[in-house]
Image (cartoon, rainbow, N blue to C red; front, side, top):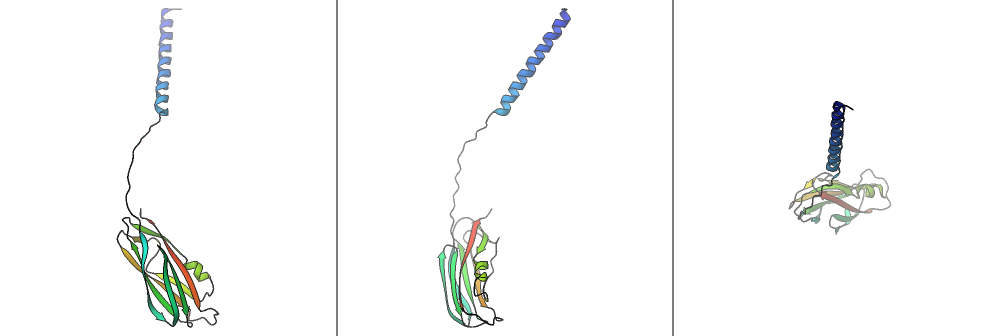
Length: 171
């Protein structure tokens, strides 16, 4: 073998060793695990609750009651006299915590309106899903109960409803 051929083979071997060495280092770099340790502290208080329920605008109401039965759950029970009867409840929800809240859902309205007697209808005004309640603020909304004036017959003149507002921390 000539000196030139040997020199060329040495160069090829050195190049191959360099490529293998580079691939080994690259694989090591890509397969290493990165660990990050740390702690964080989140502080805040969550206190969304109904603070008050008041009756208002009673029209032909035999009897009515309301009760705060959970932090954001209230039960209403009305006994109405005749078609066209109605009552409004002013309900105040308060954010006594330090975190802002968003109303995710209102539960109970659809279920109670589908139940008998269907001519007595509950509705909510002045609050809706997506509304925010900032820390320290209060919001008053209406729960209305109406015996439809177009009703011709009804066997039961009373209807009870449990309504719940579900809040989540604002993003």
